[in-house]
Length: 390
Ligand SMILES: Cc1cc2nc3c(=O)[nH]c(=O)nc-3n(C[C@H](O)[C@H](O)[C@H](O)COP(=O)(O)OP(=O)(O)OC[C@H]3O[C@@H](n4cnc5c(N)ncnc54)[C@H](O)[C@@H]3O)c2cc1C
Image (cartoon, rainbow, N blue to C red; front, side):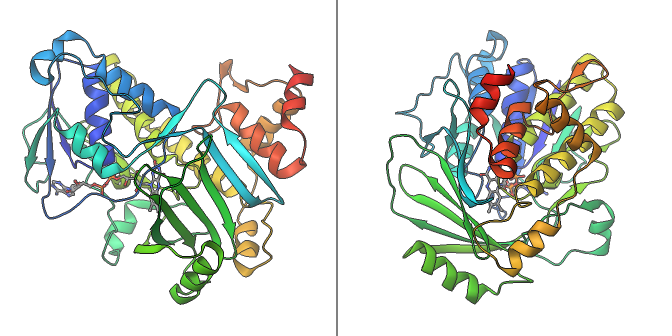
């Protein structure tokens, strides 16, 4: 089976790795536009990225002739500027500091996306050519990046996308010296204007000061960033929309993925997981005959619930009483699904069930949702709740 992937950013590379891991005999070609570099952001992941890397490394011998026998990476020697990520630390959110942890037995990775994509692309046939959909392949994944980047959106582009509600639309990117800690987390620090991620890599600390340009000017953001975080080298600015394609599949054989398909702000670093969930659904359709309509409906629901769950994080404000936080708080509207999940959780039914099937909220495990609820909303001790109700 011949699979063509447009784009060798994170979405394209992860799509290629997942195909090789699950369908080792597949023939993969990655096309990329030499004049369009990949996004420099996307350094935070979930533990399932490490699962995919392992599955790719251990894939069956059928693919050895094209890629070579075994790959083997480890924390010390991999060339991705990697550090261990044990979870996400929230400072100044909802009135207190709290930790969205991955559990004692699971870790994820912080890494440099370009170094990761460059390293992984050596295992695939990569063709430097700007292409359309008229390429020779059974299936095409369009991972060509944001449909809105670097230019004003045409009304035609907007027709194909739904806007997702979110209080942020701009980021100031910066970096400082690397630092070490006993345990390593992504720090999400509340600010007057929104929040700032602080991601420890081996060679540097990557930072993103996220704000809303309708409320805060670039000059104010820069000043407030330096006031709160001190000296740091500014590396760029980016505007973004939060959106989702209305129809991510064309002719039953062309699938959008990555920023081409959807984008939601990086609060919980959900993009990579979103791409992986979608690849698995397309594989279930192609390899196991699952209904593509069902796969698309499930995926659209997950993306919308994810966007909604991220909004929930703003619902209880922060230690800052500012126009940004007033606006952010006003966006949260609990849905019936959300209310049902919480009702089940409070009764100790940790696996919410819909028609007999265990159901997570969005990409999140049920425990992540209830931990957020306890820490942000009730100020309840989440661990004793677990002990008492299990
Ligand atoms: C501030 C910020 C922080 C973020 N942090 C995280 C995070 O911590 N974790 C996370 O999971 N996500 C994060 N994201 C999301 C991140 O942007 C995406 O995970 C990632 O960049 C997805 O990129 P992509 O592969 O879709 O597109 P890109 O990286 O833009 O790659 C596009 C590729 O398509 C190629 N291309 C385009 N058109 C053509 C064509 N016609 N023919 C051939 N090739 C073509 C280009 O050459 C390029 O190779 C963050 C986003 C922002 C803005």
